[in-house]
Amino acid sequence: MIYLWASLVFVGLLVGLAVLLTVAERLLINYGICAIDINASETTLEVEGGQSLLSGLMESKIFIPSACGGRGSCGHCKITVLDGAGPVLPTETPYLSRSEIRSNVRLACQVKIREDLRVTIPEDLLNVQMFSATVASTQVMTHDIKEIRFSLNEPTEITQRPGQYVQVQAPSPDGPVFRAYSISSPSHEPNVVDLVVRLVPGGIGSTYLHNLNVDDPVIFTGPYGEFHLDEDPDTEIVCVGGGCGIAPMKNIIYTLYERWPDRKCSLFFGCRTTADVFYLDEFKELAVKHPNFKVIYALSDPIGPEETWDGETGFIHLSVDKHLEAGMKRQAFLCGPPPMIEAVTHVLEEKGLVEEDIFYDKF
Image (cartoon, rainbow, N blue to C red; front, side, top):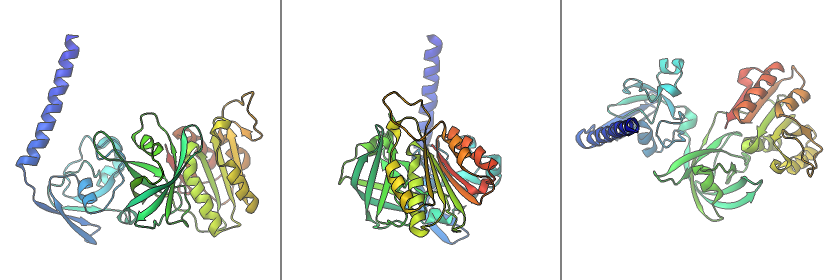
């Protein structure tokens, strides 16, 4: 017990010292106004020194993705800092590869603005906006998944690529935080954003979203994401998802058939039981309209005595292996748990797909 109390006192002293140093820096050190040169002087910002690079950019309406609220625990806010950032911090190294460190990639939330900076930010991120919206509808899909539709107020339209995501602002005890959710509404519906959200026990973002009601106000930023749909109509599209990973797949599929009614596309969707199945009837109706669209749902758990199921069983990567011929020109989009992503990626590579033709989001 003595050792426990000694450890707690020691940790408390360290935390207190860190807080005191932070407060002292803010009160005693004035860094003045610092310049941030973006993309070789394409844009130059003037911001108050002493804050994080992530905060300084956000104040100037440049929204770098960050799921942890700038606490250095998600690793999403990576940008290239060419000058003025100082050495890489121990809080950054778990999230940066050696090649990223050599290329001056940093976590924007951990870089303190103490002098003028030169940074490189991808064009896509410079186009991210903050949106105010209103909840237009909510629909229960399964016992723990809801579909939520936002009607955009300001701006009134969003330009998004199929497979991209937004970051919804949610309240927390420590202040507002942002959580990422894929857009499920197609790109040809610019006035709305649909999300498919699984309720995570204790999850800040999902709890907030599941408790929203129609007409409630919402703030989010976006779009983010590196999915790029192949524009060649001869390229077959393969979509593989599980759970709320159906969201980007729904976006991709409906966008695809709005533009190319005869294009080949296969959807593979994994569920545990029949209680987890949703959107199946809707996708079957779409397949009737577009015969080149194939829909395969599979249940991974044994079929219960009271369940009726005439679809496939087993893990979804087995269905992918069963139905896809090797050697075809394809592009694949995956969204689901990491084990599913790894298993499906292995199957796709055996079918002849290369790394750059496989896009995925792990959750």
